[in-house]
Image (cartoon, rainbow, N blue to C red):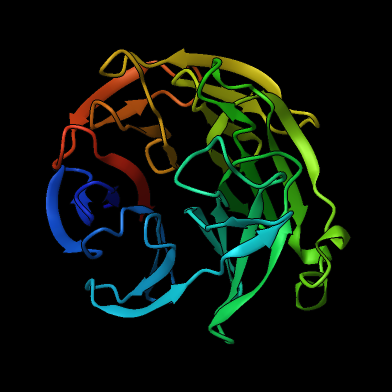
Length: 298
C-alpha cells in the first residue's frame, strides 16, 4: 500500500497516514514555533523546511531530530532579507529549498528575483543559491534530472494581491556544474515553461503537469510535452472563509489519482488527474486551517 505524510503547519507537526484506511500511523512534532512548510524523504532522512525559524530540519524516519541548519540572512541594496523556507526537493547529494527572502513575514517585501538555497548533504551546509526570474519563489520540484522552480510573482496587499507575474522555470541539473556554478548564479540559465499565474505548487509525471494558483485557489492541468506547456483543464476550489488556498498537489501513479490539500478548510481532496473532477475529500486532523503539504510514499 501507500502512505501519505501531511505537514500540519499551525500544529507544528507531521502526520503519517495509511492512505487505504486513512488512519494515522505516526505523528511527531517539528518543534514549537517552527511552522513546518514542506518535507521530503531521502536516504532514510526526513528534510523539513521550518518557515518561521528560518531552518532546514533533518529527522530520522521515526521523527527524531538529527540536525537543524540555520539558513543565511542576505543583504542587498541596504536591506536585510530573512529566509522563509517553503518548498523543498532532493537530487543526488543536494537539497533544494525555495526561500521567500523577505524583510519580514510578508510576500510584499521580498527580494527580486526569488532564490533557491542549495544544501550539500556531504558538506552539511548551504553551498549557494539559484536565482529565479520572478519574485516570491515558493516551491521546487524534481523530475528526473530536471529542477522545476516555481515563483508566485509580485504581491501588493493594497491592490489585488498577487499580480499573476509568476513563472514555472526549469534547470537541467545533469548539464549544470553545481559545485562551481552556484558561486555564479548567472551561469545557471533557467527556461520558462509557463507564466501568467500566481503559481504555488507543482506536480510532474512524465508529460503531465499540475499547478495551483495561490491567488484564486484554482488548480490547472497541463500537457508538459510541449514548450511552453498547454493547459488541459482547470478546477476551482470552494475553500473556507471565502477563499481557497491549495498549497500542494501529489500524483498517485498506482491509482492514477491526484491528491490536493486545501489549507483553509483543512481538506485532502482526491481528483481525476485529467478532468480534475473531485472524487473524494477527507478532513485532516489538526487545526481548522492546517493541511499544508504532502508526501506520498509507495
